[in-house]
Image (cartoon, rainbow, N blue to C red; front, top):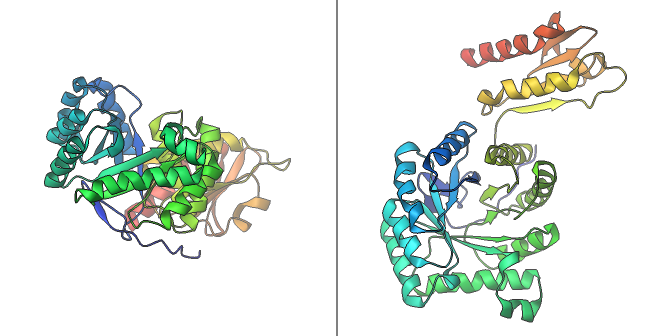
Length: 355
């Protein structure tokens, strides 16, 4: 696989995660439960930990959300980002509580002295700020001047950046998200030519698991292949765990991250085994091995089995009520259909223990 040449950017540190400057592209998500519901939020944080989420964002709407931050910090090592709008006091309180990052727009949290107070507190604590421009909340004057366009998106981002730069704050990352893929692409491409701050990629309001995954894979894939992007979020109307899983798959399939890949054929008339069920069972059973640098094949017949999938590290090829277990194209054994998944998992466990 050809190596993608990434765009050079400054590097910032968000908790224990480096962003930009050649650091690995991180995958993040956002809690979908109220922050003040500490039990539900912690449950979601732990679920995100299990699938390898590297940054977690959550909304801070009122001071009632602040106590939760102290509890989150006790329970997780994952960097936590407070998402705040309008009230600078919430940003100050979140910083005091120990958040690792802020997502704000300096232009909408008040006068210059309030922005300075937030920036000063963040700088003292080594906390970076993400400027998050969204196509659905652009300033009226920019919409009047440019319409809903990449020009409006970029100028909004640059105006917020200047506010922080003017007061000496440069631990910045930036996003210019839109729900329309062409607008999102044009905005990020244009902005990447004007700044060297790290970029957070995402399609806002992308949609459900299916439509949102397609939109995000398309948009993020194009930008990442061009070397643009330092951290990503796949925004879905779904369990945040799915966001992380899709995000990691996007990076893996571009060669930007190592990890487990499952390939499976689409089935045809030659398939005499319940391949869809087998593929789902394999995918579910291998979640705990998601970081292993392996390719696993789940194939429907001997035609698509050890031959076409010979580059896979391990695999299954279906038959009639039975199937083959193979490795690198070589058949290891024939087993009954109801034992195929268990035998494959045991083979992978044995491999893991031997390396």
